[in-house]
Length: 315
Image (cartoon, rainbow, N blue to C red; front, side, top):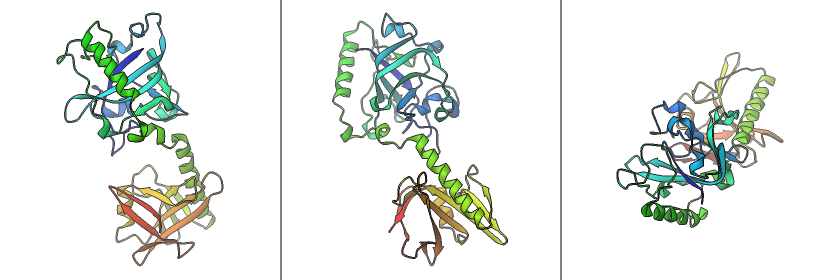
């Protein structure tokens, strides 16, 4: 079997850096420049992986002696250091294409970061954090294993290495998705989510403008709300949530929740747009007498399932 081990920085989701998921390790570049942060992002049904090999070149001829520029049908195993020590398998791509040189990505979802490995998302598995228990020996521990380079071909004529490869292949073949569902198999399509969010923002903006408000976007300022709407002495702070379906259940960040629960929240609005892409419907929640009540119906009220942030849904 064609196989390649790739060492990257450690993070939870590999869908881009965020306040709650920042990459650790992975080289000398600043975190925001580490391309592997998008390794398990589903983009149009594909994942585009990045590993930093020595001198920027993956010697694909070591995977398949007949290949020069790229090789197909490779089992790529992603490994990373655990924050408590040791190197472990974090996920894999089956039937991947490995390129000798970096490919320039024009995909906006990857922030134009390059890649040198790709595979269909359905063939990609990112292990949940608590499932990352398969250790990868280091060269200083066992001769022939992964050393200073971030790519390991596991092609040495070493019986211990050969036995380990068989062990890993068996481990992957027996992995059951229902015992630890891969993040990549359940994630919402990134582009679809962006379209829903944009449609919701536009719908709410138009709604308030039609009612005489001047509307200013605050989406990039991390204030805890998306829009400021002003009409005379009325100044509203509006958080917008877009949904593709009818059911109302939205995720609130700690910052958004803090602003919603502040004492001066009389001017705060939570605007939820359901069916945002097809037949948008606006439901606006206002804080009244200790409860968040729909502007459209007194029977529609929010309940909160507090976690690190919160999920708000209709009672």
